[in-house]
Length: 252
Ligand SMILES: CC(C)=CCC/C(C)=C/CC/C(C)=C/CC/C(C)=C/COP(=O)(O)OP(=O)(O)O
Ligand SMILES: O=P(O)(O)OC[C@@H](O)CO
Ligand SMILES: [Mg+2]
Image (tube, rainbow, N blue to C red; front, side, top):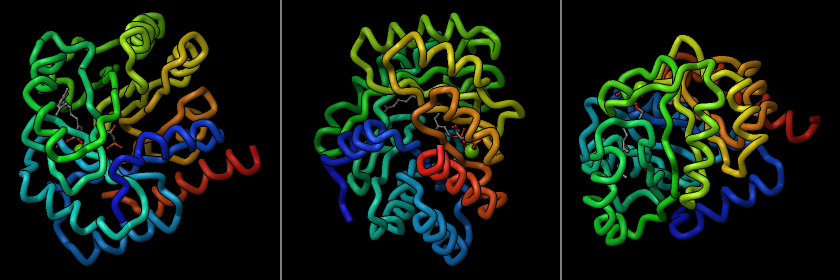
């Protein structure tokens, strides 16, 4: 099912209804057994994941990206590219997190990749989701590759300064990223501070491994949670995270 042209409004609707968004992050490089992959994504879909993010920093080829997007095509939720660079663009997706790495020291990740890819994004009829990407704390591979000057875990005021700058430049989402597999997630205190004092929609990812932590981050004000590694290592746990987020909406 194609959600081209409908992804941004779908996400806005979830936010307006007060439903926590859950993004299942699929790294095409980590997909080895197609049968297992098919089962896992169908479990995530049935459990109610809101959308699939597809991307990875190292080892992802366009061929693998296309193959994963093809396998996801029948699921009736958006397939959104989470790009680490301009080679990871495919017309098989519905949308792309059109991100600028706000705290990079390298202009390429701030504006260069965006200029190099914008016409390709248009030709692929991908819906750009305007996103500020801010790397916090541990930072992982993304911080290293993206030459980020990471925001310390405990510097919520600095994160807010970036959030407001992103909002004032018209970005709709701020992705607070602790890095894939981070030993510590972005802290609830930072999310609470940013969400209270700005109007930007916070997406949070990196190191989220438990329903309790995911719920805590949503309660602090995040509109969306990203889980990647836990899907690869313990899919049942990922389902429990989705269930927990749904309970916040239904029971509070
Ligand atoms: C707008 C376009 C097309 C590109 C912009 C690209 C930007 C700004 C990238 C920022 C820097 C960067 C390297 C981001 C990584 C985002 C990502 C896909 C993270 C998830 O991958 P990991 O899980 O870290 O990958 P590995 O598992 O391969 O380490
Ligand atoms: O793999 P995890 O640790 O869930 O992180 C997800 C994402 O934020 C990485 O870019
Ligand atoms: Mg990863």
